Image 1 (spheres, one colour):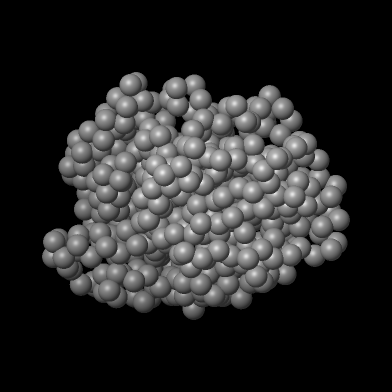
Image 2: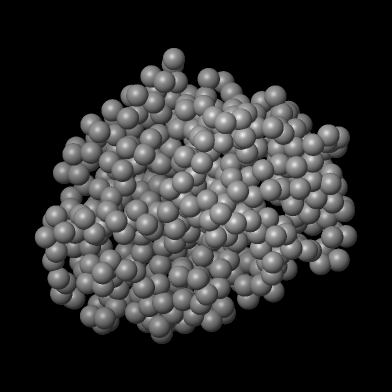
Length: 472
């Protein structure tokens, strides 16, 4: 097995804190809608949709609105309008052409989002809507009066929202909904190279998934066999593996139950996931980022040096970015599956984020926000939108029929058992107390038995404050 350099605990913690925080922000900068990240302080001009696709959009049924004010403003680290050269999505096409709507983008850096929002709310210049995809706006933003309930604008009994009632009920405080949740999105996907799998005599994970055999045990067996073949081989790399495996138990570190925030850090299933991750480190199968300035190398998947790269699903809809498709080989060789099933869980749970939006406090055009949310819901439900999305994936990202089939399979599973993690959404202090320590088993070989008791009190204190605010 491979030898590795050992950093002092202090040095490792310091480096990990800075690097993993940056990586968390990088992950959150990509939305569930495959939009293009724009430079902070700029807006992205809208692009056009092909004429044939525009005709398809005209067939979609959406609730009628008479908008006096047709402009809405969006605040995020990315622009809701796609940049030139990127395909316009169906929801924007509906909003613009069916209702004459226009979206104005306010694009800021990740660390500036809430300061900017607070400043605009306090001066009476609020934007209209804000993304929920970063998983840090709820419940924190609602508790701090950054966002307002949406029940006066969204009718959960109508045809566009009745099927979404269950997922929207996950974002309720004091009986009021705060997120217009359009759909769950896959938070973590395991990318691999099919040619590398075949060359090493390993079973294809997607085939194992179809046979209901893709679980932690099968995954660990593959990783050990791959790493035993060469000291230069590694099982995994990256920053998303801890969230992926821990949430695959069906238990988030911090959850919501009956409108209250709950602390699951001591849950036995999370302990099993952390033990699994600890064993990857102990057996020297994790790519040693500590030897390379705490920089991961997803391109090792494409050249057969790393077996799996757990990352956000958005990486499959980028080309030449740091984590994009070019790292993993030719499109025909790229495979991906959900995080494997936890053997002790009662179902196959999929780590999820939400494709949805919040209504800002003091929003000048809540009716325009509602119209856009109905456009989002109608687009998400339509076969026309699905056909357009497929065409865009094939033409823009070079997807294959098998990749599309894998996507469909994974999203069917996601609809059945999504798991939402609220660790970012309680407070920044709660997230800082938990984030890097939760990764210590995988990155630093530290037992979760020790770590969980170290962090439990600080996290619980933040949860208690948040729950008290909810009762006030």
